[in-house]
Image (cartoon, rainbow, N blue to C red; front, side, top):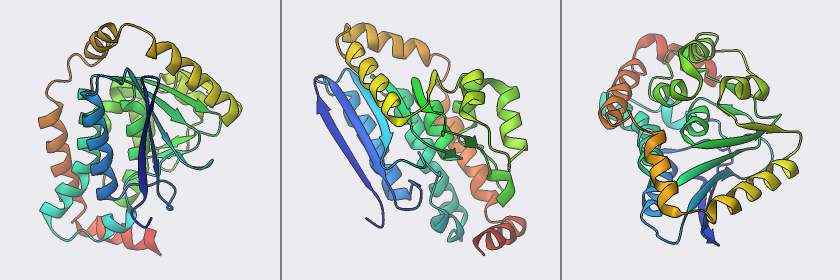
Length: 251
């Protein structure tokens, strides 16, 4: 459990991916690789018509990438590989032939916001505040930016990225287009996720696949783009300013 867990369950043409990590559902590299592999595998599974992405417990949806791994980076290649973790997941979600429903029950930070943005349709509770805190530790949300900007626009992304200590409410995220609906409770959220997934699972799978391709039109260069963004972050994490900021944050 130190590296977290990830389970995939398929029933009635609906695949549910559920992840967990004791550190606020953050992602070590191994767990990110497993998540990307899960999307790649489900993409070619003819029994699956729709995917639900969720995390365990009732608090944080996802706190982003592993902080312990981040502070341990000592070379440019290590840095690039670390930031490629979320890049590979976003590209796996983008290339997946199935529509992905995000179920966001709590706060999302950094890469967690990127995960929500890479879903095709995202539902949340009012506890699902969001924040991009990367500037506070000397880096920036470069890898997830294309996915987040695609959903909420440049102005809203700038507001999140620049005011890096500020939480935005789930209702702000809904207004900007990250969330389709916001619910008062997890019970209401789960009921709507189930209702939507069941409806989608009965639709023409070829129509769903064509819609997915349409929604992601214009992102064909992301394999190269996100790798370049990972290199930017990999360079920054080795800077003295970032190392100092990370040590202060760790303390």
